Image (cartoon, rainbow, N blue to C red; front, side, top):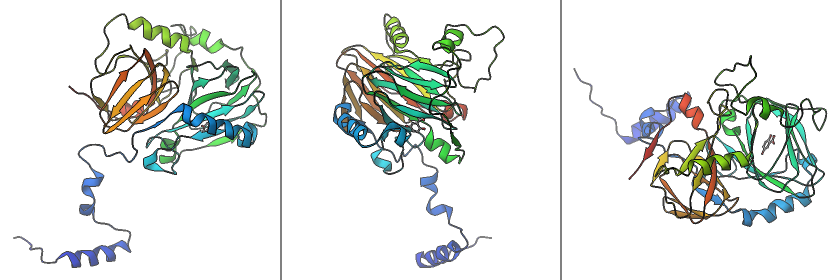
Length: 347
Ligand code: GTQ
């Protein structure tokens, strides 16, 4: 026996209005949006040219102190998700300025953060009682719930890129934060201690770590990254990626922090990647050189310290006009552990 559907569009609309009062909605009106054949990111591709925003950042330095602001940061807000303080659906990025003599007071939060130093020397980040001096291109992390403060003991403004998993933690409603009573942490270990203990392909003799724990190494000096990239460049590059490396927790091989993956690439002058896409929306920064990113209908020429974002599953190509080093970060380790991550290397 079959049941004939007799009612038309009006009857359906009346029905939808009626059930809405009981917080019910029909799946069949939204199914294809909920379960799309491939990702339909809300965020768009975009670029921030450092030379065009540096003046605004320095102006913020005349309007508010780092201490008053707690963190003097201009958020890089994705134009497709205005007002949501995110650069991708899952990640946040901003440019942080700290002027000579200033401190950004100690606090901790469940959100994980990375820093990539763009301009200036003489600042430090302290993580759980150990300071590290910040130099151009250094990749520094403050894993979930670690105490951290920043200071500038030099004579130049220092700027770095902040990358945090703020939207991801917001999605889970799992955000906790607290301020320290002291602005700056007491030094518990001398600078370089963590790198010496954990960062030389060795770990303390009785040390064991779970694969999802963050790394004890909290600075990845650019001198080492650069040396590694140039070292592998004596062999042929991957046609889709160039010379590409991934930052790891050296004790486990996993991502330095469980929620944010970080990567570095070297593209020799004249190198052009073949089109590539992956399901992790990705934030790129150019540390050295210059080039062009082609994504969809957009062409983004980029130079040193420029930041650009490629949404999930949008094919892109990179061309290097000079020898170019790129840093990038994304939520890839989260997608991988959930079995969601995909990539496609295209012809
Ligand atoms: O340095 O702790 O850009 O808590 C945003 C939130 C930086 C930080 C940001 C933060 C921080």
